[in-house]
Image (cartoon, rainbow over all chains, first blue to last red):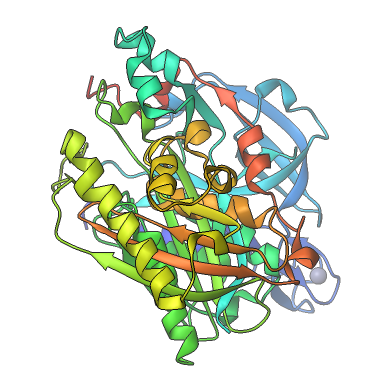
Length: 136
Length: 346
Ligand SMILES: [Zn+2]
């Protein structure tokens, strides 16, 4: 496999999660998880998991402004990465875009937007998925 | 009757003023700017492309009418800036709005009119009973060669329309197209920027096709210019739509609500459709709207649209055009170049 096609199965499997914010809910204890989990850590074998689409709204739990980025993100600096607490409970890490850096505070309301996450060079796949922006 | 069930737009947050572009290329007198009638244009974020904008607009459209996306049985995406040469934008949109897997989907390309053609395809499939709802999209992140007049006008935006027979907020009374082989504007494979015929893009291209499609539609439906409350035309700049209204003897005031090029530039496949969305944001039940797109190469699709009572129930369910236009951040030319990732080409 060439470097261009190496991560394809993983990328493909994660499309529902990345595009639609699909996670899991345990039908036994009602705990919600993002990303998808196959087993509820609380209920173990007694748990029964189902897919759950999160609404895409949440608030900033914590954040940091990136000045020294990983390769591929050099042009985007400075940018904000945040731990977002979804309305339904689970937390995830995402970039905050389309917002003034000074508007991002702990507790700021944010909503999911659909953006390009990364490109595998000029010939490879374009990876899309969720980021968040400050609710206006 | 077939019509618009839902609609939504996306306009990126960033703007650059024509004055700022003029400053770089020594056109302080403002000759190009005044000639185009464009004050500022929209610029996509670094992580935005025709697909991401199509998804945002489509999600707004679904939210607007609150239908189950699984009932969308066809998605057609019109663009001249599809992110892949081979691999459809339409599948990305279908997955992201939750319409997969029981639907048909394809990308379309006809310069700036592929979005209206996508809507025509949805209309035909709804009318024939092949599908329940169709999603037609116009979306573009267009590029102009640095220093070219196109650099002042090439903007970015997206508009999505859900077409169906039930629950329409506006009926589509008819559509008419006018198409010829006219070499006014093109881009060969592998080229970053388009080539165009300069002044040749006006008379034999934009005006001829827009006028003939609009006239053909009025003849077909037995309508006259005064029967329309609003008119929306493709807007490669801020001036052509006004000129074409005069040629068609349509009051210039009827063009204003759908004329956004002065504020966001030419959004290509999305241009006439964002204009239509802007009209639907304010139109009253019973209002009749003329929409005529234009795509280089060349052709025009013209539509007669009548607003229904249902539009009042739905209003406010969505982020409207004015809200998108009002939320903006200005870039200087340096930031603009960084954002467009054109560092290499300069
Ligand atoms: Zn559990």
